[in-house]
Amino acid sequence: MSVSIALKSSKLVSWKPTGRLQQTLTGCVERNGVGLHSGKVSSVRLWPELASRGRYFEFRCRSIPAAVEFAQVSPRCTSLSKDGFRIRTVEHLLSALEASGVDNCRIEIEGFDDKEIDAEIPIFDGSAREWVEAVEEVGLAVATDLDGNSVEKMAPHVNEPVCAWRNDSFVAAFPSPAVQITYGIDYPQAPVIGRQWFSTYPLDNLVYSMEIALSRTFCIYEEIEPMRNAGLIKGGSLENAIVCSASKGWLNPPLHFRDEPCRHKILDLIGDLSLVAQSGNQGLPVAHIVAYKGGHALHADLARRLIMS
Image 1 (cartoon, rainbow, N blue to C red):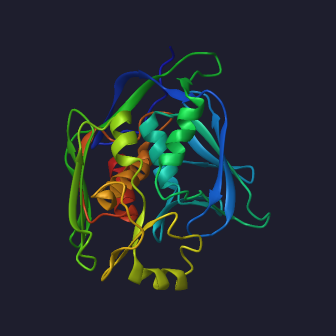
Image 2 (tube, rainbow, N blue to C red):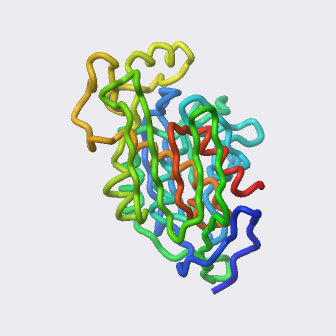
Image 3 (cartoon, helix red, strand yellow):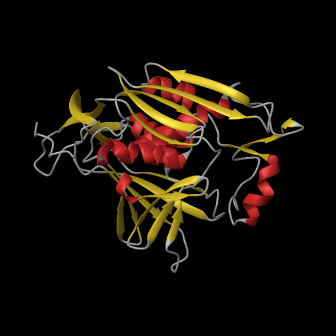
């Protein structure tokens, strides 16, 4: 077994051994689908990768690492951008890869017009189910480097409380011996959603696949027209999101869980915090993460504070 390369620590985070080896996929798996915001069809292939290479996107022969340094705040999604090229809506895929233990992976995207500089990951049913099933389809293997050596997987442990906030919204991380996430949302404009809280402890692959991965993205019906006028959700439909009307309640029941919107926020958070990952190591911080009325921008702010402070 070889030693993992030097990791970027900060006063807030220390990298410690997990007692596990870095993993990758055993083979290539492909999925095709429509992007939520672009409305365009793309093909995504997940390829095995060498240990310490981490997760990265390949688009038009260009490589974009799945790292917070390349994260870009986009309306209603998380994007990665490098050298003028952008990959949108990466959060559900990265959430599934992080939770499933796919530490090293080349993510190849095809299908867009030759002149496009933007790509978008398919939305499927609005959850991470399709990606979890794709990983299960091919399975996992210990990742090795060019010399055939395995590499011990490290995890970022939070040393002291850290918080990102705007107005009454916040995302905070507190020292903890294990990963725990507590999330709260509040939608007074949609009483059927209202205020919800959900907590996971411990958060492992089984808990994720059964309680988090199936939760779908959601929106308020009255916000759809303004979003479309802004050039968003061109691929949105009742097949890839759960839609709630302020006056009529859910328009496409049944829900997978009573508190599905809150669980989906945790799904998004895991994908966004996976961007803390370095060199094939764990991205999700070992901490008790508490969020209230958060979103992609706040999630990314916390990730930056953790590794750039």
